Image 1 (tube, helix red, strand yellow):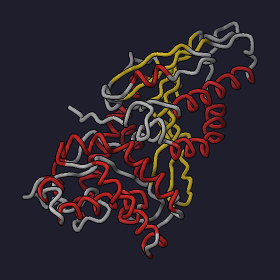
Image 2 (image 1 turned 120 degrees about the horizontal axis):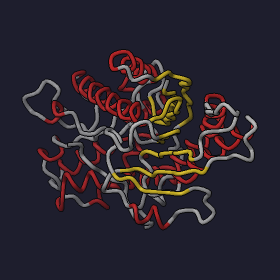
Image 3 (image 1 turned 45 degrees about the vertical axis):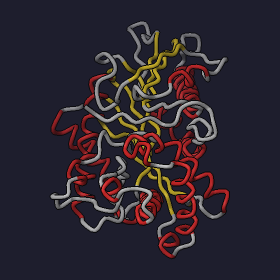
Length: 366
């Protein structure tokens, strides 16, 4: 059974709805690439009379959270599909659109539903459940999309939490600065397993010629896992937890057993997972586009550090509270995290690895 963690719900100060600007900016950077890729690779099926046979076009956004980014994504997807229908002469035969918004069962779907755009041109439904398993009937979906979600693993690799294991990740919360290479290997193996499950489910759900678009954080080629800027930024949270242990505010055992279920791969790792899955499990995917986009990390001012801290809290407060319970003072932790981020942003290490990267992937079901 996969673990279920949700972004902070509601629309308050620490909510994901109010603190997902970076994800929105990342999607904006990839929007033209997404639209052009869909238009180039979308197959519109016609009958013998050269009329479209797609009366209902079904779209899914996997890992939708609570908005507003998911609505911008869906708008861009529908616009791209409509443009291609029109370009192929079907301007008067546009399909109806049905959009499925998916996330973990713990997601705040009420906030999502309340925020639906009043001018939406599609019928909508929420689909709770892990996207690492089947969510939809066989061959029922035309276009599926996931933005900044597949880097979350179904679980922390068991090896890194066991003291007797060579991959025990004592004192760290990610693999980025671990003393043992076994930790990174365990995370990479878990990511490969999760991605295989993800693509296996999508292979069953997509109709022939269906498209799957993924946008996710990645590690710039050819950097090492320890040089992942995002993971080092998350390790600043581990530094804050370590300080709280030293001051007796948290137990050492509780921190040693805490690891974030996040893995940031390189583009080549993702490519290998797709190709191996297609070869070994006959998933029927072809990689139509795989492109890395680089940009500087935004930690150059006190305001950018504050915003980054709020984003981290919106994403990770749930998982932290589930692990540490009432022993954790969340406000105190993120105050310390902000200080650690500012310290890191001024360090020689940050100057060396300050670039972040996102990966855009488009695959087609053949």
